[in-house]
Amino acid sequence: MIWNLVATAFAGLGAAGVALILRFLSRKKLPKWIIPAFAGAGMLTYQIYIEYTALDLIKSRLPQGVEVLETETESMVWRPWTYLFPMETAFTALDVANADSRTLESGEQVVQFVLYRFEKHHVTQARPQGYLLNCANREAVRLDEEGRPMASPVDGMASKEQVHRLLCR
Image (cartoon, rainbow, N blue to C red; front, side, top):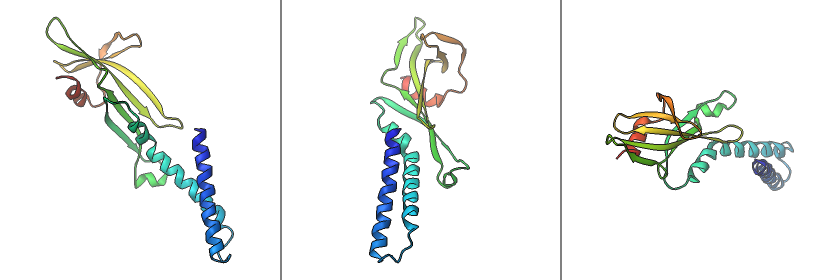
């Protein structure tokens, strides 16, 4: 986060430098206020760029075998440009490479896997959640921290059909 602040300051300094050069080239005919205006515009532009590309950077750093299932976009009043171009605020990823598939005595296939939910706040947060999926009847249950199944089946799991297609063969 400190590097983001440093980069924002340098974006402002760079834009102010461009304004200084423009003022010099115009033989000081441009007003003095153009320098802080360019600095502010440079910092704002950099922050908007970072907000829109933060989750794309995380997606590019995901290890091999992790599939992005769904993304969420949002528009916000305090960021009016998001009404024209909605900003991605969260995504869900499935760790296909580390999914553990087993066949039960009854012949049914069950798969233990982890879904990761990445949410963009002031600091990007990642929340892993383990699941157990019965491929035959497409029922999934959450796993607790020790890896034991919880009692009730899951209703609102992200992209249940996509998870079934990727894990059950």
